[in-house]
Length: 375
Image (cartoon, rainbow, N blue to C red; front, side, top):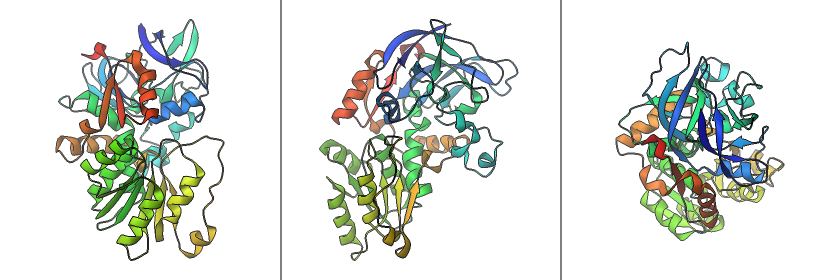
């Protein structure tokens, strides 16, 4: 069949909307009519070259929701009409990591950047003029239709709005889990969240849910600081130095219990600043991405050892997709997780580059692409 999708022909590059050929589902796969796709910064990292893509052209989008329109043969448990969230990370349910509840580190992720089937690096479902097109994270939600493996799909309650549900494919879990699972925020903690975009806004909410008393949201953009207070931040700051001083004033000079870095583009200097802002035995959580060529962070090794500080990476917030995506949606339907409020602007597929221009301009917290095909 044919589908319209936003592809990158080269890196660095800009998204281009083209008509693609899309194969139907094989065993273990489903064809999904995409209703909505979040515009995560990670797709922009691909466009700029910060994140490598092993296949070009590649069709973007890794945070989506839609409706199943065809089920591959020999694929039990799935039916036409099922509503699904498409996860940016697959979960096989069988490897060591899935078995111990760490599905975010599933072994299928080893071929995540290839854009082919996870189990077969030479098998693609999208093509353009006879040439294979990679599916970013195996799902390519910047497309009207997409064929995905069931390891990337989670069935959800059909009453949940799909434009809100798409956010749990990546951003919600990455931010919320960075606070709850990785930083392990505790009641009465003082927490700094550095960068209040889509990921940071959910890190703030995760800290709220974990019972933090002081949540300091850091962002140079005034409307993002205002939004952070609406979703639970107790204090705001324009920069990390101001936030660190606030944290020390609240903790008898000790510093924050944790600092979570969720800025759009990671710089090693941000790691130094956040690491310096935490107390003894505190946690500095690095959730942001920067150029894959960056190595090293100028932290104090003296403090790392003698202050027993923790420097932690956060992949998908330590969330197991098969287990936790529905949990996030339960928090949403009960009114305890704000999703609609985080969506700043809705775009058409043809406006994908405008959406990322708005993100860079600081006028978006989270943009969402909606598709007429899924009406």
